[in-house]
Length: 439
Image (tube, rainbow, N blue to C red; front, side, top):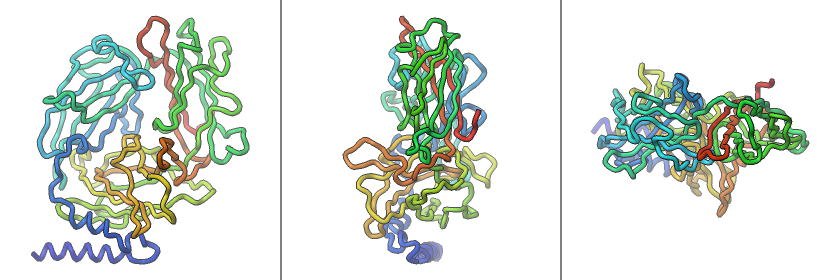
């Protein structure tokens, strides 16, 4: 009884400490009180909703993109945690896709050697954590599966007892270096865009491919920071110089520069980092209260080094973060002067690079804030707030975050090739350029 009373007193003190006008978002925040003080002791088993901390990257560097070269020693790593209470036996399968992530329709044995469905035996149970989980790892290619073609791929994790139930999907690329890509990022020519946008110059030499019809055989995609919502697709070059295809003019392609991602450091519960107001342990789970965020109102860029929307699983207090880092409920708040005429989402690698309903913030009239909570594994996270207008599919990534030419962004150029008589799109070139690095 004494322990319970102490816990409630500590939480009450925590809530009262946020009652100043400058922190009005938590002055009367019944949402925070209700969600902390009444969190269930056990996490219910909610199928794929309890697949957490999924990452896919080139082995050796957790922040690398999931791209490897065909027929080399390079490998991909796929990792995820299963927080469900009942152990499951999972399998994975791999699907070849076109440049638009639609299945190519070619049989598995044409693009892969091995088993179409492979059990996942590489997993470990968490150790010393309040939230229990099983950490799974998949390395590709491996002794069971080898991929024979370049292109886009989707890895699907399914339950062995029900292969129709996909609990996780991860996209990755395998390329073959058949073209030479030259690209750089510069300031736009148009005066109206010079302070807010970034422009690319792009040319591709296709001599190694031989005879190419650039109006039908080549498709080029440019991604900013690996996210799909503002990608640009080019089916035809702007002009041709012998074997070189030029995909830029004086006014295109242009991207909004955006702003640096917001940051969240959860690498330890024993010290507070910028943006974290308090850690509390309640009902067998950690809870992390963040300082309320606000809309960016400055018209001047502020230097803030980020990791371009990605996250890293890391706990400073253990030796094996994949199995010893704990989970915590993180309480996000966006303080606003008005209620937006649409919806607000959290966005980044932590959301799977998607505007997922599970990451939508709810507006609370009582505190005039948008709020949500997420169960996150200890680590370092990047995120931003995205606005989606009512009854529209258009997403505004910079209405809340603002946009600057000076923002550091990474651009990935993907070149796909499909000649006559071939049933799939090959990925024949990849190049990554940074807005800060000039050639």
